[in-house]
Image 1 (cartoon, rainbow over the protein chains, first blue to last red):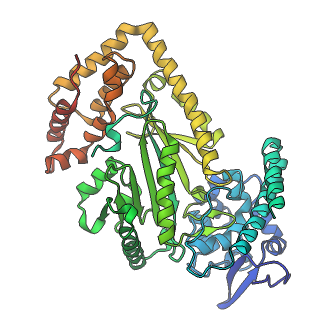
Image 2: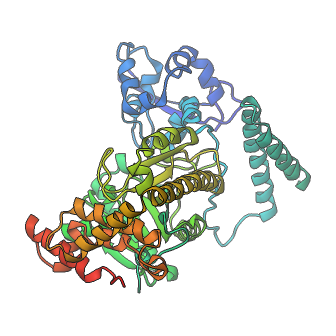
Image 3: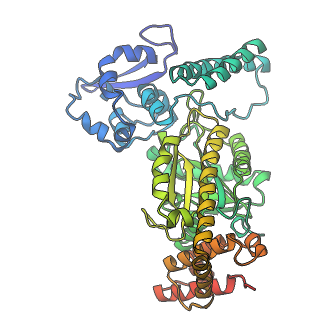
Length: 181
Length: 343
C-alpha cells in the first residue's frame, strides 16, 4: 500500500484516528510521519530522553500535560490488537506483531539507543515454503537487494559512530552482494 | 539418563553452565499482553499439537499446566526447565528433553521460549541446540518476523535475535574479596548484565552468578556470544587469580574452610537452604583447587546438590509437604546421601 500523503513510498505506519467519535484509517510512510509531526518527534524522542524512563512509564507521565484532543500521537491505535500510543508508552511493550509497524518507526531512535542499532543482522527466518513456490532465483535477488539496503543503513551508522573496522567489513559485504547479482 | 547438571563441562572450576534462550512469537496471535485466555489456550493447544507431532521431539516429555500441581511446577522452576514467568502463568505447556537440557515453553512472556543448557563453558553447543530446535519449530508454526527488526518480541529489550545467552559462574573469590560489585557496575558498558542466581540483591549464598547479554538487536547471534564469552573469559581469569592468591596467602585457612564445610555437610542433621549453599560453595571451591584430589574435581558436579536441596525438589523427592524443620532435616539427609566420599 502506498503512502496516502506522498503516494510514492510504501506506507509503513497504519493507524486508526478517533476524533470526536469519528473513526478514520490512515496509511503513511515513516518519512511523511516525521514531517507530519516534527514537534512531537523533537520533544518526545529527544536525544536526552533515556529509554529507561520510557519503559517505566515516566515518559508517559511527562506527556500528561499535553492536550490529548489535539495531540496527533494520542490517536494512533494498532488496528490489530487495539494498543494505543498512550498505553504503549506506559507499559513499554508491544501487543502484537503489527504494533512494530505502527509504533516501531516512531521510536526508532529509542531502539537505537538501547540496542545501539535498529536493524536486525542475525539469524533470518524463512517460513516453510509451500509446495508450489515461486521462481527461486527471483526470490534470492529480492533477498540480496533487501540485504544490501540493510547493510547500507548499517554502514552509514558505523561511519557515523566512527567504527571504521565494521564499516570496511560492511562495505566489502555490500560489494560482494552486488557482484553476485 | 543423566541430566545436564549432573556432569561437569569445560572450565567447570568456574563455569557451571552455558545457556541460550530464544524468544519467539507466533505471527497470527496477539502477544501475551493482548492475548485473552481463550486465545492463549487455543495457541497453546495448537502449538503443542504441532510440536508433539515432530519426530525430532519424539523423546521429549510434554507437560501442560492443567495436569501439574504447584509442587511440580516449582520443582521445574528450581531445575530451570521452566522460567519463573512461565511458572506464574495460569495456562502454559511445553516440552522438555530427556536430559532436561533443551526445553520449549509455550505462553511465556513471548509465545515460545526455547532454552538450552550445556554444562561448563560451551556456548557454541548451547546455541546450536537452541537454534536447531528453533529451526524445527519455525517450520511448524509461523513466527512473527520483521525484515528490519528481526524476531518480534513483547519487550523491546529482546527484539532482533530474541536471544539471551548466559553463563552461570561460581565466583567465591571475587565475591569474597568484594571485587564483584565493581565488575557488575562496569558490565553495562558492554551490553551485559550480572545477577545472582540464588538470593536477591547483593546477597548471594552459594556465590553463583549469571552473566548475560542485554542487547539483542544489531549484532548477529555469533557476535553477541563472542562479546559475552570475551568478557566472561576475563572474569573467569580474575576468579582463578583470586583463588590462587587465596591459596598462596592463606593456604591453611582455605583448606580448613573447605574441609570444615565438607564435615558439616557430611554430618549435619538439619540445614537451612542458605547455610547449605554457603557450605557447598566452600566445598566446590576446595574441589576446584584440587584439595580433595584430581578425580573428584573432574568427576563431581556440586551444582546438582545445589538444585537437589531446593525446597520443592526436596518435597517432590519425599512426596509430601514438609514444614520448615522437616525440610531442613530432609535437606541434610539428601546431602549426606549424595555427597561424594573423600579419601
